[in-house]
Image (cartoon, rainbow, N blue to C red):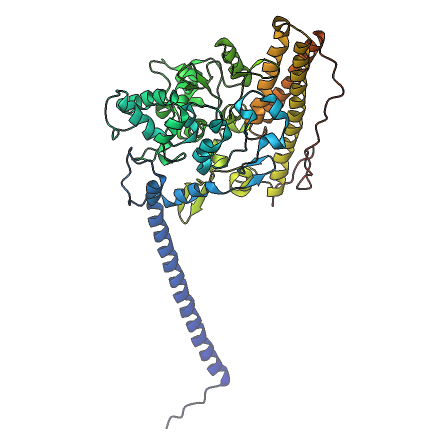
Length: 517
């Protein structure tokens, strides 16, 4: 008879331990399988998301200028676009409609006799560009031409409709960049520029909209403003070096059989600045027809633009106090940016003001266009590996130094205006005052070029400092000319107050910063 030997406690423990290990392995295997399947499902979902860049809800065409309709197909971009209603301040700008004539009373003297001495406010976001233009006292109290719509409305369809009325061939459904489409655009542009503003503004319904920068079929960036198309052709035909616009340099090196055309010749990265440069530029209203003209025939620098104005004998107005034939800069962001390190490094306007953002697997440009200082992490830190506080401190140091120079330049220009008026009151003849008035024109143009440009010098700090230094020098030269004609030697000039901010980080302007960890 066989008898079973009793199992030893050690054996029992070993078997139990083995079964526990098997259970642990099984559970881990199941968990790993579940995790792998979840990861696979997530990857698959993200791939599907990446392909779902557009929702075909609305039929878009060249006739649809309402951004709401475009937003049905492109809700991510539209969500950013509608946020341009937000009002925010930065130290030297932002999107709050501050009255500049109150914050800087010298401007009332500098612009005396011109509409900007009546109303001159900080610009707001794109959502307000049409309503603000309609409501400014510069339009209400002074007659203005329809040319203002070039930069203050969604005008592509309005121009084309007006062009068809003026005899341009084709229909509105044809592509904008077709031969018929461009003829409609240009004929309508010329017609609208010469209209009274109060009549012209009835032709448009929206501020800048999707159709102004995008092809409705392909969403490709495009330039639609005739003023820019003509201006960039004039720049390309000049001899001014533009290394930051390589497509122009390539065109110049070619056979030049056709005019330069950014919609054909420019790279996508260039278009990410040119789309903005359609409006954020210097311009003037040419001739009796008030055609919006970009004065780039000699180049993009302030003195090259000034030389063009001298060549065509243009003035914005005759100054009420000094009787000088003076100029008013508009908003030359594209021109000043063109002189800066970011442009030379291939950084576009959109890289900083419309940085890429992600929603799931989708990467889109943020259409909430605003100051990079309100979005430092995505606007700046993708390239600059420093703490946000350090980046802000560096920017504000540049801007505060520019503001200090600008104050001194404005003080000098105001003193020159007063000296010319004093000499004239004492009987100085116009011929004798011509030199001083010409120096006022030059000095005032330079300080206004920096003041009207909305980066407080940051787009090109050295260029801004150069212009303001020249403005101070020219204004004081003009004062000396007026003093020779009997103007009194003025007392000690008004002192510009220091606006240098305390650094937001331990680093200073003269010490290297420590990269963010």
